[in-house]
Image (cartoon, rainbow, N blue to C red; front, side, top):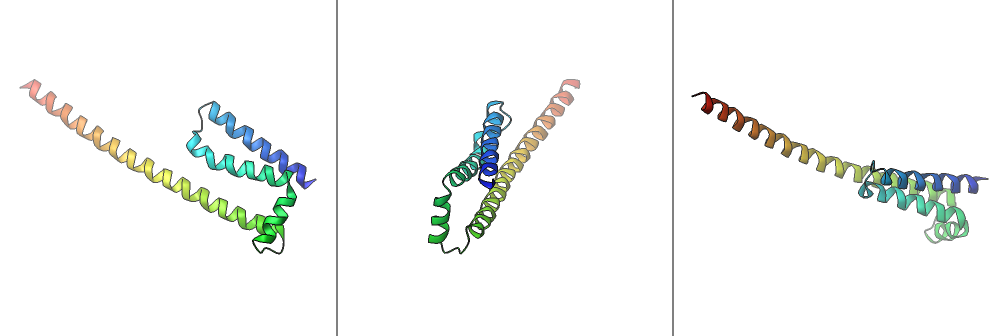
Length: 116
């Protein structure tokens, strides 16, 4: 039952992300990590023996411990990526605000010169 739920959630997430990309509500840059995680979840749900072997090779006693550890890493990566994009956006906003301020100053100067 858990296998079917995992497959269903993974497929739903993949289709939702693809649909958001198609509607241009989400860029591929932001969606790539979500697609990767969803695809890996789907693969491990279908071929769960790979999950058991990989968790054993990596030294985890239980595959569930490996899954929780993997989720912790994925969430940390997602937070890191979102933080990077947020910082880039803030820098971009600062640049735009400065350019607007310069344009407003130039416009005011032109209005004052025109009145003279």
